[in-house]
Image 1 (tube, one colour):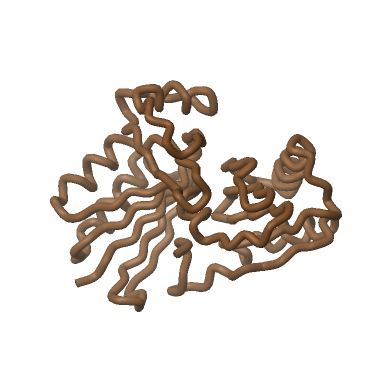
Image 2 (image 1 turned 120 degrees about the vertical axis):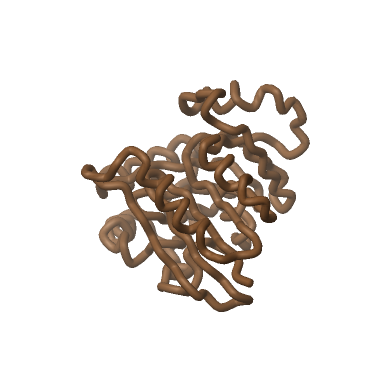
Length: 237
């Protein structure tokens, strides 16, 4: 039986039906101006109606906070996230993802309506936050490193220094200016010099060729890790 992989991004849903290591079906849905208010819910329902035996959910929705591993005052999760973005406790489920590899953990929220839709199927469901999954995909070399994971009009950004997490952020990007400002402003705030820092780019590189070409104008060391080829690996493994 197939496994259903779901990736929730800002104004979008992507899914894969996987049997073993083979992708059987893959679709992406993005909200447009003319889309109905329940567009993502409808697409989620369609994906859930397909035959599968388990579900893996990754949320890249940018409502989160980053804490050291071992922080146990979980009742403060909503309040900590509220420092970064508005939180509605009645409509958002509080979630936790722990990354032991780098000794950090993410509190994040996930819409209750989708959470309940997923749990109502009475199948094994695994939830995770994209930042935790992204960290697990990184093999840090040491020194100062910037890792950028590109989605559809969205990117994640991780700064590592000597294999320790210095910064994680998640941002909507609608223009080259937004993208470059986000990267350069973040770097300046944490004291990473352009010449000494190595950059690694993952994810939707084909869709974001213009962003990447602009970034190349400013940075010296930039490496493309992989592209997001159809039926290959749009959710980082």
